[in-house]
Amino acid sequence: MSQKAVESFLGRVITDKKFRQLARVSPEYACSNAGLELSSLEKVSLQAIDLSLLDSMSDAIDMAIQRH
Image (cartoon, rainbow, N blue to C red; front, side, top):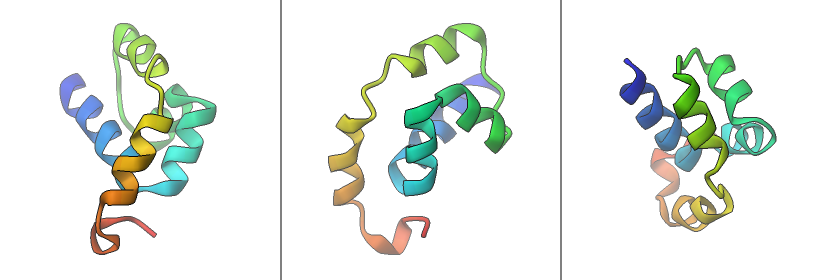
């Protein structure tokens, strides 16, 4: 379940602007709020991601598959 939660987090960060903003403040809270269960190691690892690097990827995603 945990790997699936990490994949869901990453996908959602790329396709959901509001989720990405929340994750910038606290990835752990964003996951908890979305019902994604993560291990302690995964939480630490997600905290270390520079989410600004994913902004350009998000900008490249067609609006048809982004959450509005």
